[in-house]
Image 1 (cartoon, rainbow, N blue to C red):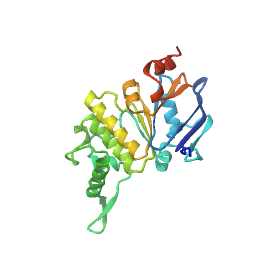
Image 2: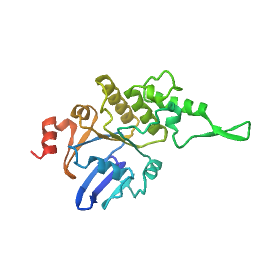
Image 3: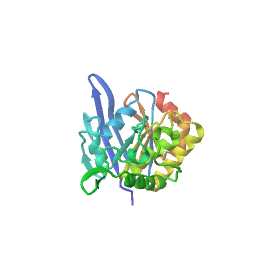
Image 4: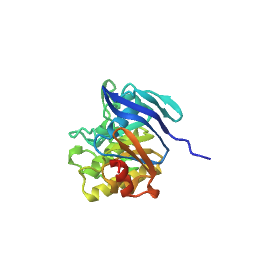
Amino acid sequence: MKATPILSVEGLSKRFGGVHALEQVSFELFPGEVLALAGDNGAGKSTLIKAISGVYRPDDGRILYKGEPVAFDNPRQARDLGIETIYQDLALADNLDIGANVFLGREPLRRLFGLLPALDRKRMRQEALQAIETLDIEIKRLDVPVRTLSGGQRQAVAIGRAIYWKAEILIMDEPTAALGVPEQRKVRALVEGLKEQKVGVIFISHNLGDIFAVADRILVLRRGIMAGIRRTADTDADEIVKLMVGG
């Protein structure tokens, strides 16, 4: 029996004035699958993920989540449904600790002396620790600002936040950019952990090594048009580059 896609994109198009940023893009994403988006700058990758995550409203086509059509007015609606996006800047508050970042904008409160509302920092740190531990990454102190963490640890905090809030689709925009080789390996391991938890991952990267290391399938965009989609096991870097440049 064929698996049911968690996300279906059907004929998605987006225009900015006379510029066709996306034109009739269609694909499916399955639970526990990593789908890579490949393409040169201006290929439409960012426009596509912003249409899926609620930043842009598509001009044509539709998005189905668990088989039901959805339309988002803003990213919060997508997040509430279970679609989280981690952009290159990670959207972390550098001066706050891990617990505060996991609960950023959704902080739990407790009653101080039974009367005054106050942030429940103990609960935030405890639950953040549980989220981080599911990713099998070690962070010795949870009470330090996230700016003191390594690049891989910061990625883990961003991913842990998505997991804590029950993300079923995680969009990762250039997660290994500006990381050293050991940190890149750690991010790849984090993606493998997401697959085991049956999270569907859309993985955007310019690094074909990362793509071939983690992706089950590769969708190639060229000038807003879908140039092809390939199973990673059935293709190689040469074919993907040819699809990207039109050779």
